Length: 473
Image (cartoon, rainbow, N blue to C red; front, side):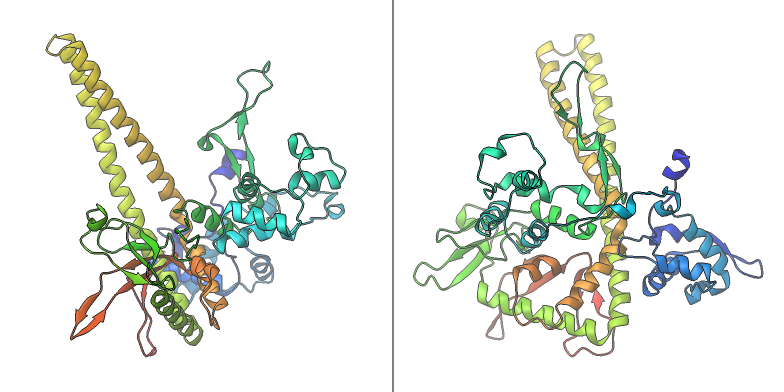
């Protein structure tokens, strides 16, 4: 039974329908293409049959039991075949045994600790969050357990009950169990005689998703992990931190822009390219941009985006879903090409190493040269193997883009009446911003900014917002 369950898909995605053969009432067969699969998936979202994670909802089972299931118009004549495909998705609720104690268990969530995720998305670091929690007199995890009468090991009992550390915050932020998952084999022991546990590599973990009730949405948790992997927002010489730090990149060289202030007038704050050749770099332009100008432009673009989304909701949703899929496919194809090239080089190194060994045995090269060259080849193969694994993990992870696009739409709706640009708004909507060098056109200085939104990339919205679908790049 375990093998059968493992082969079944866990969520309803566009890829679930692509290539499947369906049959209408007259017996005519049809192969589902990409566009038809997208229409079926989008229709299920609209009808409330799947949630943001692609999991089947109670409404799907209710409508199915009452014979009221709705499918996309493109496959209305083949509804039975479509439902059969959807039913192939594994639903843990259908195989979960009844728990007689479930009515006696009460889930209690500490809102103060959940606020850690909100503070991270708002741009705060682990140490800043720890300082705020301590100022708000929030109990540390160890102190909380002790207050509940549960003894916990460690030195935390000797510390003040509200003395938070950055490591405690990071431990909470990285706990995947908050998404409803169970993770086994995170540690191991070399022998039953040894008490010490050793951390296991993440690729050796056994992860069972959606086993228990989540207290953090998976998309929020993944956004926090993505944000923690970005460049740190370091302070300038005046101790100031900008909410744009880590989000601005040079359009010419791709390096990050650094945050500064004017020596003569500290009120003037700006960014410029960290790779500018005047600072011993290679970029030919400074890409100078003031923070006040940046705030006005970004807020204006977000307002135009939210206005379009509210006025043309259906068209905007369809366009974003399509763009997310197209963007994900483009990224996957690029990564696959890189994987093929790296694998070819890896095989080439095996052949070279074999020839090198034969030349050494035949006496054509010395042992010292053989050792030096073999060490070089082995180091390159080690780097190639690590990069191939990283790309394959990224390809597998990119299969949930439609769910992410749906969340992006809901995030856009949340900021429909935004009057001020905030760090949280910036981090939830924008992935990064390309800053181009200012140019003088007809005696007027103009500077182009390219906003890359999370999951959907670049959106080109018409200036007067006509009844058109926005152009996605």
